[in-house]
Length: 111
Image (cartoon, rainbow, N blue to C red; front, side):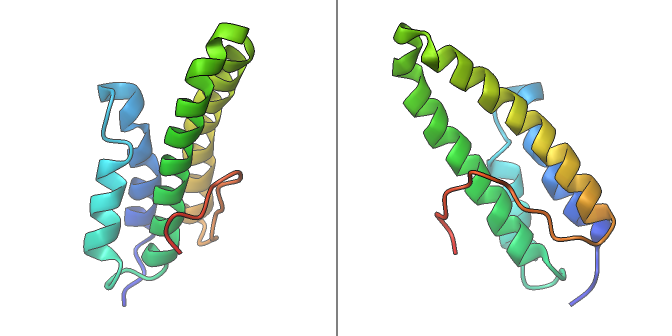
């Protein structure tokens, strides 16, 4: 296995594609993780964390949508939007320094 912090950083930052294109924030990290998990050191662990985080954001968003009618969902969606923008950036910085970043509030879909 090779150490490739740049690819790990790119994988974390690829989640931001959702803000640019409207999709891709789950697909691109999933493809990078699936193709590189055997060859890049720490890719398997961090890729699972990223995919779990993206799936969790999707589930939480689906839960918040009906709650918009009682105003609570609006605040939930705003919080999810902020988390899905800030956490990939901070975790990409951590990955660039060789740390193993975590995503809080992630459900464990892939273990």
